[in-house]
Length: 378
Image 1 (spheres, one colour):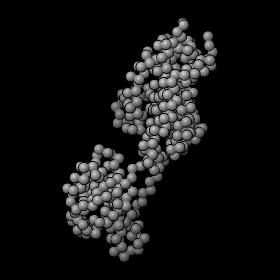
Image 2 (cartoon, rainbow, N blue to C red; image 1 turned 90 degrees about the vertical axis):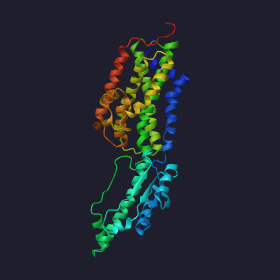
Image 3 (tube, rainbow, N blue to C red; image 1 turned 180 degrees about the vertical axis):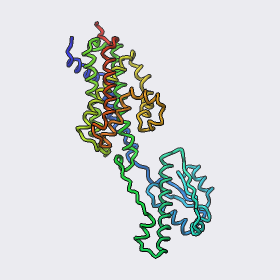
Image 4 (cartoon, rainbow, N blue to C red; image 1 turned 180 degrees about the horizontal axis):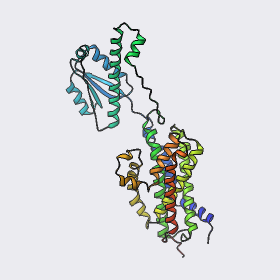
């Protein structure tokens, strides 16, 4: 009979000796840490190519074009006089959107009537579409403010008073996290939690599948040996999580508002829960190949149920309830709240309680389940 710590070190040695398992639980998270943030490194989309159909060709329409071109979100690459030409360029993919300034644009404004301008966008790319709308909207608002200021100046007020009258309420927007509105800052810290969980789950399932096929290095019918495996897996998960939070997030310059005293308990509870959950699920794997067949397709649904890619309020209630059985669902919220938004440990107690209950449930399954791999010679 081997001791708890002998089983612990034996589990770690078995993970490192199995090349496929080591690639998943050690090399995989490292590769993801470079590969996944790289495409999003520019953070925000800038200079979206657009065109303007100026059918009014007046001083005000040309001023609107200049204001649109000054926006950092869009780049006016062409100004045409026919809306058909603009639509054809959009269909050909030469531009991602455009603005149609109708004839009579200046005349309607001078008469005090409403002047309409039409924005065309490519709805297939929602990020292009939203930023293009923002660029043109800001240009129209800037033109309206200038016209309002000119109107106030005609009333014999000073330029400062005209500026105050044209913009009586000023909105100062300040975000508590993701201050630049970057896509990488938004998506990578959340997806990283799923990556840490899924790579570990797949690796441990392959490990126990192999132990069932060719025999385990120690007798897993003893509870202490199974618990030793849980702590060995938790050690790897803890190291991977600290690598992401300490090095990857620092390298990518993600916001880091959390305090270590609040973040460390979240890391420990998450690592223990993912380890116990992985070992509990792997106890149902009979063959090594089953891990690949059954678990790889689950990653995308788990990401969508994490509550960051799609609002939880818009997900059917049964799916939300089922997602509570996955550590990453509450783990993502706990990490984002503490590390990205600076929440205290008390403020994420509901998420920690959910993780702890899942840890206890997984441990109960590990302790009371009977069918475990045994050594070949037994």
